[in-house]
Image 1 (cartoon, rainbow, N blue to C red):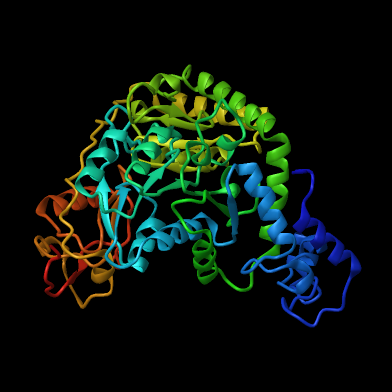
Image 2 (image 1 turned 45 degrees about the vertical axis):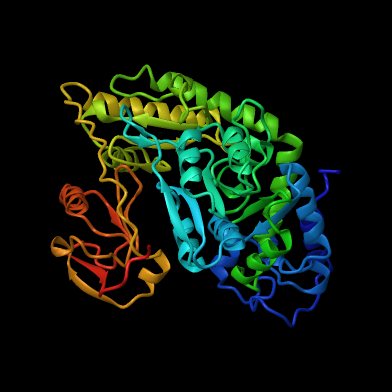
Length: 489
């Protein structure tokens, strides 16, 4: 295929150049009806292609023209049989993956450290999650992926599962042996779904880990906007035919997607595919080189450590994406949260995320030697400020065992509930989510039985000021629980 072509973006530009009289939405009509300050800032070019699914521009819900051509080019670029554009982000693509293979009561094998969109999909589908604990790094205080052996044990216990979901790579760039996992799961004639939100560049450079499509996975939700240059909220769902039904996937995506699809987001996917297909290897090489330079410099700074390929060597750490620069700050005597705030306040520098012991910086094709130098200068100043006399925080990586699932998350989420004091909730079935950081995985999900260990663990972390997400009561003084339900067998 000719990857110099951008069928959708080209059609949008031609349509805008024709300057048609518009009696359709959006109501700003090429920006004329926009707020003047916003129009000046955004620019008339962008507003001129903020259009709707009129006939010349095709329809994402049932593409037969330029969107279909753009998706076919994307499929060729990503090595898939089908590629579907998502303007609902990777979250929408992940939900579509799960809804396309699971119906109420079905089992799905998933890591415990999944994105919340997976849990949303499980509630929507009425599926029953079978959790696998991720491997935990006791030196860094972070989670890696699931291993082949843990997947094997889960499949032996649950051969009737409808799918296995894998994260590849993790937020921190670590990969298990995806090809080995895919081959194992396929031996049970079960499809593999991949959360590839942080892996768009791995499709275009052999120095990076194997992509989901190359490994033979059946579906992968791939976030083009995170690292591949498209606009925020634009992603793709890549599909291999065989164990999944592409027509059903298209139907599910259409059910989840707004009918007022953003053509600016779609055009950014079309053009980013062109850039990645033509120049992906080179731009990934540049990002890799800059990231490795940053990592080498960081490891010369007292009190800081950024892991690299030396972390590899076991089942959970089979491969690594070096463009994810994780910086361990524990030896400065401060937390990752402290570091994030300090960098913002003193250097106007924003990072991707922080936890108790680490910060994460993404190095992308949008970086330059200048941006990396600013990061290094900021980190050197951070070290000069805190390292001398610092006492390293004790690294504690502990988490209660995965609780007993007594109701499907859907039944619990929609069940009849009452609100009770959290400290008195041991033995009750929770009806909402609770996430605690670190280590960044959900502690309690709807349908699970609350234990005293859960309560103690959560309260301990709330009291030291760590962010808690999920429950309606953000102070975690009260929690929603099920009145009384019969446990599933």
